Amino acid sequence: MSYIAGGGGFPWGAALAAVTSEPPSHSRRFVIVLLVCVQLLRPGSSQAAGVRPSPGPSEADGCIRASDILSCTAAGLDCAPRDMPISAVTIDLSHNRIGQLEGGGFEGLDRLQTLRVAHNQLIVIMPGAFRNASGSLLRHLDLSSNRLSVLEQHYFEDVPGLEELLLFDNRIVHVESRALAGLGSLRKAYLSHNRLTDFPFFSIQEHSHPHLSMLDLSSNRLSKLPLEDITNLPVSMQRGLFLHNNSLVCECSMYGLFQHWDQRGFASVTDFRQEHTCLVFGIQKGTVRFFQHGRYFDKCDLAAMSQGLKEQESSVLVKVGKPLLLHCATTLAGRHVTFLWVSPNQEYVAPPGNNGSLKMYANGSLEIMAARVEDSGIYWCMSLDGRQQRNETWEVNVTVLAHQDESHEPFNTGFTTLLGCVVSLVLVLMYLYLTPCRCPSCRKPRTPATPSQGNEAGTGSAQSSILTPTPPATTEGPGRKVSTNKHVVFLEPIKEQQNGRLRAGMGGHLGLGLLLEAEQHSKLHSQAQQTEPVMPVFSDTPVKLP
Image 1 (cartoon, one colour):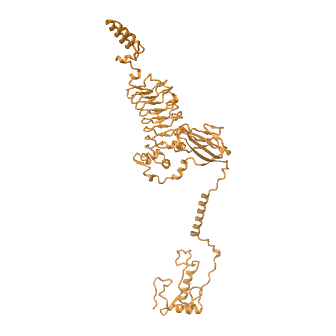
Image 2: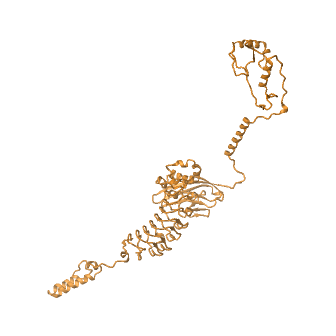
């Protein structure tokens, strides 16, 4: 007796022996029928007989199951299928007509890590829709290309371990302030191609999202950016903040922010320079690409605005009692990077901090809750990438300033320099335009002129009126004003005509009160013979000598 492989242990040898021992009769026919019946009754024999087993519920809905993947794409579903396999790690419900996700629709799927519900007609997500759906194990959630209009607070309460959230190509106009609050493990969030007019940047300020490295808000309807909230974001988050193709109004603060990111080489700006546009004075037809047409911002004081956009410097000042946040500047990134701080008193600080005065976050930032004088010193940050076996260090010198009397302002050199220039200018103007005060009682009596003959007397009086420092007492007309300006006139030696020739005045006068010596008089007389034509003092016509 022998056993035939594939016979399931049935003693085919005994049957064959029985058949061979019997004479050829109807018994052989009976044995053959018996063998066929036994073969049909074996497990799995339905397929051999051409009988297909009844399909399971997932296959009946048009879904395909492959190991731990359940694919229901383009299956014409109006809702999520029921009785999904609990061993599913990836479920794909894309390209259907699902209008809402019911509460408890994914209950019991404690291994689920990836859920795709893209390209549906999703309008609302009911409370508890993701309850008991692996909780912290769900890493990837794709809700793109749907009809969601508002991100409500309860949408993602049950998925705290979510790392990647896709919400692009929806109709979202508003994001509630606490909608992303519970996603502490979130790394990437895509909200582009929606209808957002604002975004609650303040909701991710207090390091509630230490791993968030990409936030895509491009192709929305943002008109103004909350500069203070954005600059308070960690540098790693600013580096991955995409804001191109929005309806931003051209402002100096907006331009200064993007210019700073461009200088730092942030990929969110350098990779989309052509798509960064703004509206001139808010008019749609005035859209300009401000990286190509920077002349619109020539009058902006970018140097002053960049003061608030600088990264953590190596030396910082803080007043007593004020909080201070220290960032660990490093190029290492990823979930495998760990951080450690060393305080000035050689104390090691790791998350979440110690002794109530120092608080450390998972992204490597260290916060001094209330600065004290003894907190001054050098703080060391060490970052270690366990996978790549790399480490980096960064040091920050912190100086805590004691309280000062605010009534006494510090000496301002620039102000005093400006004040000195103004005073000097006033003094120069006074010297140029203000005449000294005249005292009538201090005038000296006029010296009577020496009488002369004929024309000499008239000439002498005329010369005295020119050289005198005070105006004459009489005027030519009753209504004529007397000039008070001083004039100095340089005169040629006074000469008189006699027989058509010029000669020096009687007594050798050059003018009133100026006498010539005898030898000077003779010398003057000889020079007069050789003199060129002379202009008279009170005439505009030259007189030529014969």
